[in-house]
Amino acid sequence: MPETQARYETASFAPDGSIPFLTSANAGALLQNPCRGLRMESYITLGDPLQSYPGTAQDPFLKLDGLVEKYKNECPTVLQLYVYLSNYTQSPLDARAFAQLNAYFARCVTHRLRVLLRFAYATESTRDANDFYVSMHLRQIARWIAQNHASFCGTVFAVQAGLIGYWGEGHSCKAFDMRRAGRVFDQLIESLPQHLFVQFRTPELRDQIAQKHAARAAMHHDYIIGDYTHPWGFLMPKEQEPALLAHFAHTINDGELPWGRAAMNDDPAQLPLNNLPPEKLIPEMARYHLTTLSLEHNFREDAGKNRPYTLERWQSMPFDPARYHLPYNPNIHAAQSSAFDYIQYHLGYHLALSNAKRTENGLEFCITNFGMSAPLTCNQLSVVCGKTSFVLSDFDPNALQPMRTLRCIVPISEKQTSYAVKLCDAFGGCVRFANDTPFDGGAQKVL
Image 1 (cartoon, rainbow, N blue to C red):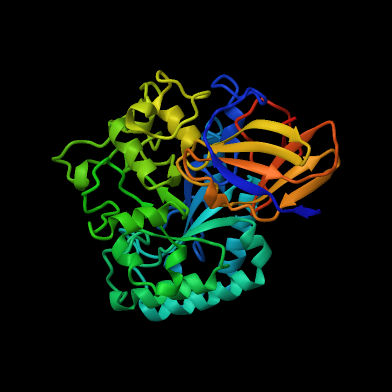
Image 2: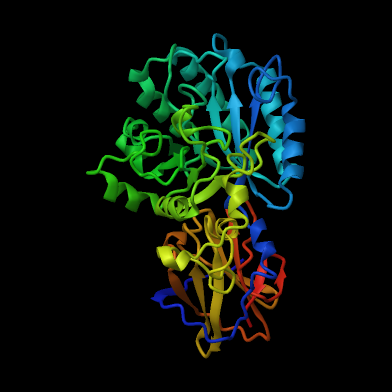
């Protein structure tokens, strides 16, 4: 495809009516946009016995198939995958383990899922590995990634540091020497393709990596309760907070609520966590520019006594994002729309086109991001003129921060009767813009 160099200008969102917008009545297709939104969560324990979560008899492939069916109405395009190495805490990984992992990745491709990947060892019932075996396994994983580079890059959209402690969260270690955590994390990062972000559970874990990897260090917040000071959250030292928040505007970040069946601090004597307020939690999600959030936690996790859980309750709770100065698309979300609908559509990126016009020098159009984070996996913007596509070689997804409008001025001499805009991610998926125009072959018609 030919390339052309566009000019970009920051603009205000002032649509001229040239491109109609989707509304809440017909916006469902946006939920299928890649690498964003509400995600699934599952597990595979490699080796013998092959299991889902360690210590269960559940087949991991059947569990994944069941999750796809369970959440078909929510249309998740991302799976957080825990790869448990619990059967190998005192031995190298074998060919069987990598064959199982390859087969699972193939199943994810079948379901059109991108993977948020975490390797782990320890749970409440399984032991962790010492730093010798963790390092050995990482060397083996690095060779596996190199040998399967295309399929790995086509499936994994971000990685969580994992490896250490219960569930790979960096705490409750028994065999692992925490003094070697930084070295292990550096080894993990260096085994991965350079475009991938690596998410850390706490600032303390992140601080242990080499400075040369700092730009790729993202965050995952696994205890979102609307309290910025809770020690189980992503608790930032005050002196680091401004710099970290600015940094996380440019990384792929993930989060989850606590389990709905749990109580505060896992103390049965304290309040249950099945009815957390959206007016506290959603601003926290936006604060960290979350790209994805777990559907498995506090939604329909089981049929326990605490149901309905928080996210279920949010389906019938009105939520006005303007009241909390949050990004939102007014064409899709009204003040009476639900809190659940808000996060479904506004986690990650949420892009709309406007103000398209043909000029004597080319084509102009605007892109506005109404989402919580920039479209960081979307690395190729092009204009389709008839049968010819022009790649805009200097497009930077970081320029589309929340509530940012970018005017694109594209020098194209070809005179055509129709024009479309195409935004693709690193995996070949194409973004559906929040516009009520034909979307054909991954391209959105603008004129």
